[in-house]
Length: 283
Length: 329
Image (cartoon, rainbow over all chains, first blue to last red; front, side):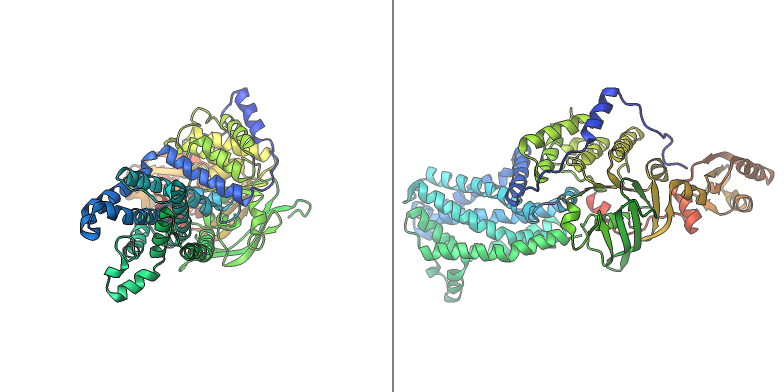
């Protein structure tokens, strides 16, 4: 039996018909969008999603608040002798940790995106290939900025006084965001390799959690067993935390900053092309 | 093939496997510029996989294809610059509004902001979604979503458009709106590759049709040629007593040829070229003492096309298309 009983066109009002003809009249193809413009457009897409569902900023606002309050008051006395002193040590560390934890969500979001038909359209557009990925990460950088601002703001409210003032804080935050941008490529790669968003989340945190805790974010490495201390000292996250503390206090080591930037560059150089390739070829 | 008219799509021996399954198993296609070409087949026959290869989303394992003169593997970028894809899952972003979706695509295609906004407005009005333009797409009806999807494909007029099952799941009114849009696009000179499960749809819109089954093209021609090979219609009979179906099958097989047993245990059908022979067959059933609940003579369905062409009904094939739908659900 025929699938539909009705055949033929529906009569349309003349005005509607005219509008349709006009819209279908050939539109000339503009010159190709530049790589930057395409990436920024995808960044704009990320911002629109936040605008429509602002609740998704909860993870980058509430979690950092919890971390700051919890670590400062729970461990401050035990670890540093007083909460005030510990706050000075731990605040840049919590900035690093909170932002790095947020990078896992870049992979989760990408994996979620892949289940939707719109990715097929993006992939069939004549655009700079990494644009959807770079754009999404640029959008995520705004989330990192929100998390960073909340942490530093709360820290100041609790009595934290960065020695280098606002410029130091801005520089530290910029450094953390640049590193986070590099690190998120690992999670976008993971996001393309794993089968579900929750698998990306689990695998991501299984990796980032120990690596963050085995750094100098919470404790001075001198207090650790020597094997662990050696690892903690070469952990890029320790170096990032040191560099952030330095920038905020005004005594940053140029070597530390150099290592952090180089690490971010290497991560991007390795994982960005890998992610782009996987995004292109994933069927 | 007429050599004067250039081919928009020229595919030879396309093959794509997923694990053990050969989703597309040597597909040849020749689609003339400016035509609507229907690819007809059941779920999982390999339609979507074929389109995804032609739209440069998948790399063929073997074979080659040129789309608008460009090789789909070596010149993928050139192909992408002149085609657009409306996928089987709506290729729009559900978390944005309709208007934002169109501006997004316009910007990505290189339109400046004001031009992208103006084009979005024009398309939203022409496609009857202006009122819903500020709502999130996830709250759209199926018909609105489809129209937005097609609008997104023509923000910049493509030379070739892939439409993968554009009316599956739509009510008749929305389906007619989509058909109107396809006809208008064709008259504007856009070549359209239309994947569909409905013979009716291919018949209404397409200049040429390829029937695809288990990853192979099993028949090709104009709708007229295809229907002639199938018979112009089919006789459907529903019996009062399902136990008599076997007997009825014998009678119809003798009178009309191959018989298709439908999922309904009391129903069966057979292709039937003209009304007189159909009436004769019904009379034979009555004479044989078989009680008939109702009967009808209608357009051949996809099932009947398949029955006539392959001798087996168009069963769902558990391939990538079906998997894809599951994933999306």
